[in-house]
Image 1 (tube, one colour):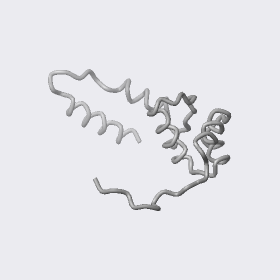
Image 2: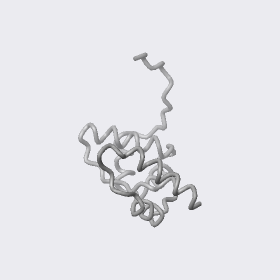
Image 3: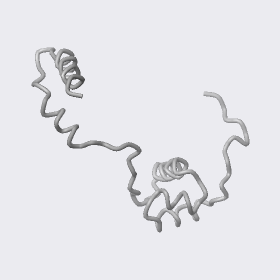
Length: 103
């Protein structure tokens, strides 16, 4: 693994203590990002780093990046026939073909 070049990471000027205080008093990752001036992905990464170090940060709700049609997914599950005796590939092919027709 190659060593990181110095100066590659951006310093957002947010100390560990400040980040933890902001994290613990915020209700969303967007709020943490706004208060720290850091991208949400960097905030998640930093919180993950702290947790690996056993810092007991609260869980922050994540927002979905895509809409999920739960009813549609459940209809697909209901249409899947039983799988057994090595027929999984056949079941997948046939179910996908049926779903394409239903569009």
